[in-house]
Length: 494
Ligand code: FCB
Image (tube, rainbow, N blue to C red):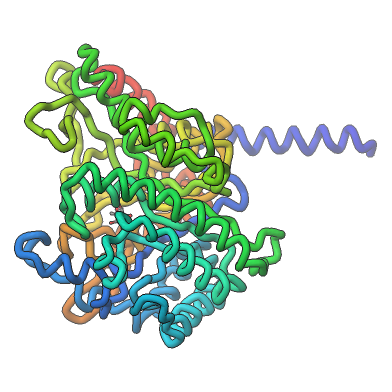
């Protein structure tokens, strides 16, 4: 048979299979798409008392129910079990963070025993066929650095760079994926502007100062990791891909007919979703609209440019925004419903923490982030769900939208669910249940929940096959209707 006719038959068969798959309402992801689950050191490990969060928790009233992180999930001792649990979900990525306070408990003194611990954890991850996806800083500072002002200290980038270099040098042979910081803007607004997280500041000046130092810290750490991690753990030609994890919030105007609301939503969108990335990718800036004149000088230095090999996107929710004089610090307020909701009569579903459930947002997020031209990894998405009855639907809805973006050409390489197990949810304490595995905090027993079981099938099938789609949506191709409905719903609310 001639080569050309063989190629024709092969492509015909391929088209046939693809169209049948589409007809059956499947949502199958590209080959080599990476499914994962996330953890973070303070939220799961337990036994961390030398950081600023452990101090912050001592203040009365800052954590719901007066919870203290304490032993958390005892992941520090049970990591092998947890990694096995991730493997049993058919996953490829194990997202974790290293606790700075363990590695450098005293300024300049690095703890080799703790380094050996993280080495053992990462070895175990790799032994189980999982890829370690490692975050250098996930919200917690060692106490000695917090005492020096944390990221408000102009020298903080020196400490951050040294710590990142130490990790890259000593663990880099096993790690190819690094993220320097988790949700820098959320950390700043919660910890330096609203004061609801450690370090508990309510001070816009400190927030801007810390932002400049965090950006500088990232850029320095980017260089340090590249320099020190020169060994390619998986042999794919990349020794260290270095990114940052950002939280993409959808910010829409509370009253879409009000110009002031529209302008405010646009400013918040720029501040929350683009300022940091613009700085790190050297994109044009609108900083003068937001910050004092000096903003441009300190946030947009040439050496920050192109310090992202990829962008980690956490996506959770949507907000409706309007200016407010009664909120002098932020100058605006946010709602879970738009003013148009009252007229459209559309229900706005919220999760147990009051966050709007808005699956189209993941599509809007990656479409917007695609402009930076580097690969995107979904590094978190999840739902607090006590009975785990809503998680399967939540995951499916988000995946349907994510796949649509991929089909439209956005380069998304992973979906990492938050979280592997239930864990300590910062100021909310232990009550929100984000885990694919439930944790009984009195016995520390883990058990797979309904959402986790569903997600393991997603990972096994590389997406949602037709029976799974039917199990979630009932009739075939109902997901298409769902997209149409959501679009309409969105139009109505605008
Ligand atoms: C994100 C954080 C993560 C977890 C989830 C629910 O903002 O990165 O630590 O708390 O929210």
